[in-house]
Length: 270
Image (tube, rainbow, N blue to C red):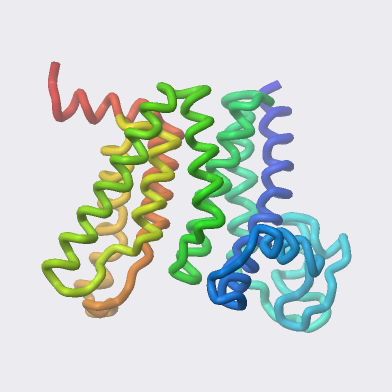
């Protein structure tokens, strides 16, 4: 039963990953083409049409060229018609979504809890990819993810009040850091999208998990970027997307909820 649930979850996740790639590619372009003023109907129509096509030659993809994960390997990661490389992101997103959905169904079965959990992890994947490519965390993804987080924590967590406290903590801490850096240096050091994203993660995970989220996010950020800074390959004013590190912290706190209790015991011995 465990293997069946995992396999079914992975299959659904791969399909979801294919859709996430559409979202990752099209949402920033919709925002740019409408100068940020995009209506809900324009988002819906922009994601639904045109059908899947090569971003290079715009040739419509047949079903055999659009099978998640498998088609990428069969085509060598290139368009069948113009042979332009798609890039690794398409494959990485589909594999990550397959793994995320498999994790949810394996641990929670086929349930509403698993469905909402998969939506959260899928949202983290999409926002991570968009922030890496565009340095953007779109409100059109953050707003529904926040509402779903309140519902999720209300149903399966400590309740909606705790979700609101978590959101306030996530939003407030990063807003305070950003404003403090701006007052000190005269430039913005924290994007407002990052601030809102932290609030969204707080709504999903609750107040107690936020120290874990921030600890992992900042630690992983420093660990990854410090070698580049010390080697001179990273300029002092280079903008670094913080969303991926927040997403990683959110994933760790979500997948390993015992981390919060462990950290509390570590720093506040009973």
